[in-house]
Image (cartoon, rainbow, N blue to C red; front, side):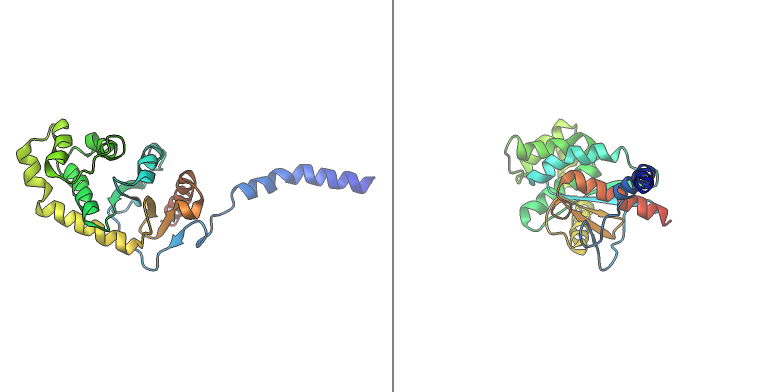
Length: 211
């Protein structure tokens, strides 16, 4: 009887600790994320970078965008979210130009979701300059400024650098997340887009703790 009581008390005392330990189980390299063979330079200086690799034409990216934008608000001080377009064909390169032209013209916050909507709600291909410009015009950009910027040296250079980054990240699809140029995360590894963000936060905290 004493033995059974002792076991019961042990269980009551230590069960919360066991549950806590299970809840804090670390995510595993090679299972929930992949460590890149060589770190890729980041764009955020001393901050821990969270790079969202996306494509405007990707349906999964379209559903992921509101999730990651909300998640961004909970990032700790010292971490920053950046967006990096993927491209492995000519249409994707044009869509990357849309992103960097909007960024250069200072209208990315106004136009980013509208460009997603153009492709997934309005079913537009967004490949012709006139069609693309109409969304910039809605954000207050003149045709002259659009034409000077869309195929400018700066935008072309930004697109080229994004392409090189994506290759260095060794992405296999979109959306994917790369934390601090070191760790790549995909929904295929984590099981869901929500879990991608959980793993990303774990790695952000890991990188911040190592500073």
